[in-house]
Amino acid sequence: MSKTHILAAAVALAVIGGGAFWMARQDTVLPPSLSTAAIAQETATSTSSEVALVPDMILGRADAPVEVIEYASFTCPHCANFHETVFDQLKTNYIDAGKVRFVYREVYFDKFGLWAGMVARCGGSEKYFGISDMIYSTQRDWLAPGEDAGIASNLRKIGLKAGLSGEALDACMKDNDMAKAMVATFQTNAKKDDINSTPSFVIDGQKYANMSYEEFAKTLDEKLAN
Image (cartoon, rainbow, N blue to C red; front, top):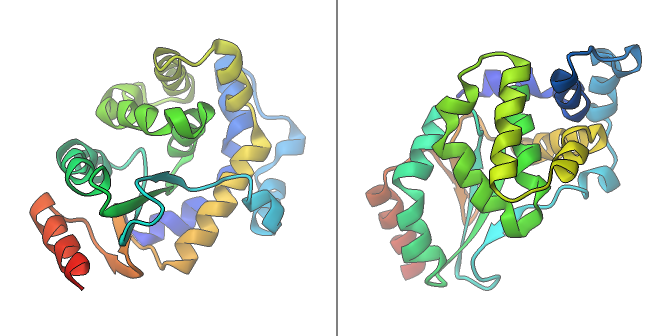
């Protein structure tokens, strides 16, 4: 996915976040107070305290010698393929082995990717990566309806399957303040690291495009050797 899509989607994403997620399930519409223009402006001028609501999701030792930051979207097929074909080996051989501190940062191309992020974060850091795995491994299935109510329902089912309560999911799914903070955090991080496609990786401050496991391992081994 390209930088054009990232920037076009980011400006007004908050309006189609938590409040809209909830309302899609209720077959209602957004109230006038949640107009696209108003929330886009509010998100664009988010405060540092609002951004602080949304921490990075991290795996591995804090003092690992190499840091890997992944930028990915839950609706990006290439990101799903990376997590299906590369990530498990990366986790076993580098993250769990204490060689890599892994940071995952969400990119939002559309409201559905934002909604998926809200469900993934609903269980906190302890459940985040488990729910993320479920979202990626069933990406085609939960996106299959192609419309708001069906996709919202499918994501809610993933949350329930992960052990979240219906009450907790309802609260997360209608949390429009969190949706705005997530978008603001995404905008800040993507600008700082010049993210123009997904998945993208920042390894010890250097940006890389999508890679196979063999390319990833070679890059990490070179970093570790230095």
